[in-house]
Image 1: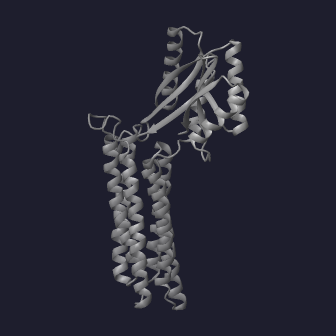
Image 2 (image 1 turned 30 degrees about the vertical axis):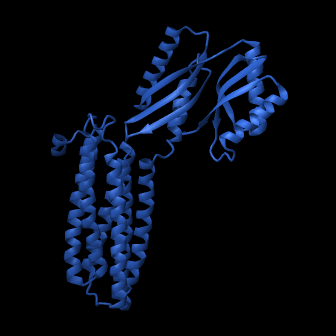
Image 3 (image 1 turned 45 degrees about the horizontal axis):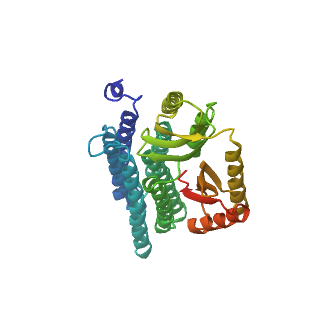
Length: 378
């Protein structure tokens, strides 16, 4: 087939370009047909719907450009690639929805203040019904493609298409009511549709802004990474998992891995390399693992660690520690460790440190603690 000559649909960016060009063709056709019908019938709703489809053509063109840019390899100025160009396309689509909703609201209010006669027939209703079917197909296609290649831009485009279905459906209802009962609800219907478009546009805008601002990573990905690492028999635990996303298939992960201090350096390094390769092949991510050696079988170490864990548990059951070490300090011991601080923890680092020190001195007057606080990113 002809499209196979120009598009490699097994390639993410090429598939995205194919979907974008499909959207351009469908929206351009719908816009032209609706403009003609709107001018012939005098319906402000149809003209507004045509304008909306024309703006959709522009957003599809922006998506096409974004997929072309995101396909570019990393360079000196953009060492992490150009994958976030898709987020910018989604941002543009959401902004376009908000603009279209505002424009329709303004035109609808004018229609209520200065109503115009509508001249519509069954042919108009038939064409608009075909338009609903076309946009429904396009929305389903966008949603399928968004899930297939994990694209925020296509997800926004799918929502936009489903919103257009509602907009055109309301136009059909307003035409039917006008034909049957001679009641012109064109302006009121336009206000209803504009409110829905504005609401959808704002929701889509929020959805797109989240990854740009740095939202919480996908829980399924988090759990999958932790499972693969902790399934290794030599791994005692993991912490400080951080994920940076620069677009689909451009995800960078760092994680601290606790392993027995008795392991030889070369042996531990081989295990870490193997885990990094497995994470990369499983999730298509770039992973960097850091080894934290853990002392095992030392009675003095175990007693002090249990003491520190008990104090933290008494302060707040959500607190946990890692990177624990014990070193001599005058006549006592110095406990050195990191504390993982959960979200919405009310105490400041300084308050928590003071409370821990006070409790530690009550139990072991010669001991002191050096605490580093890790505020969770995942």
